[in-house]
Length: 253
Ligand SMILES: [Ca+2]
Ligand SMILES: [Ca+2]
Image 1 (cartoon, rainbow, N blue to C red):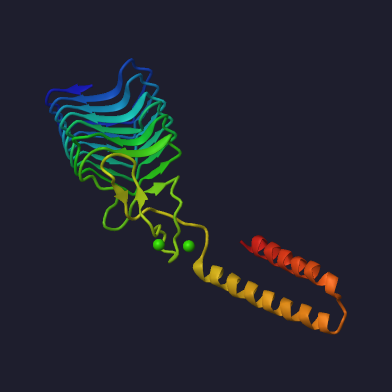
Image 2: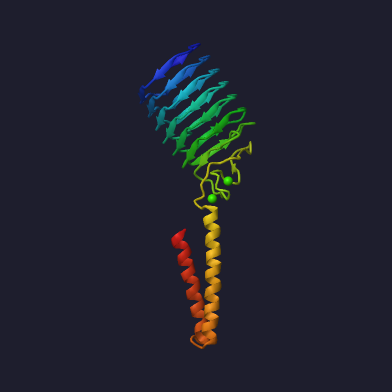
């Protein structure tokens, strides 16, 4: 625990586990500290907790797992950077931003398998920036009840495991925004997404299937005219043709 005006400290490569309340706590006016590459697990309340006016701290590349909450910042904590942390299997929230915490930056974090929210931004929190994170398989991936929080930079948003859009132009960004749950009605306008389909291949498949269908149809017609297949067989041959085309498409896709 750092408290009451502890500045410019580095907490590096510690194993912090099985504590009653907090793994690492910064409390009251702690600024410019670096928390780097610590393993923080199985703490009752919170893995990393910043409370009351703790600003400009850097929390990077920590493993934070199986706590009640992964990271929580509370009460006027500003301009902290949370970069490249792995936050997983926490009972409640992976990351919670609460009570007038503004201008914090969350990037390159993996936030997964939280029992409640991946990221929870509560009311009265503004101008926090969440981008280029992988947010996946949390009970609810994110909620934003604040004002003017941003879920993408000008270049990129986040990966969301429950995004279901299409990337028609194959630029790695989903073509429709990901809607964040909560009263803010925030959106990630640039969700990271590969829909698994390359558009040129998709168009080729449609053209091939149309050609196959056309050629097949003409062949049936010619066979029918030459009485090689009979009136009552024609439907079966048509259905067989369509099934073959479907199998062909499915095997390629
Ligand atoms: Ca796109
Ligand atoms: Ca695509």
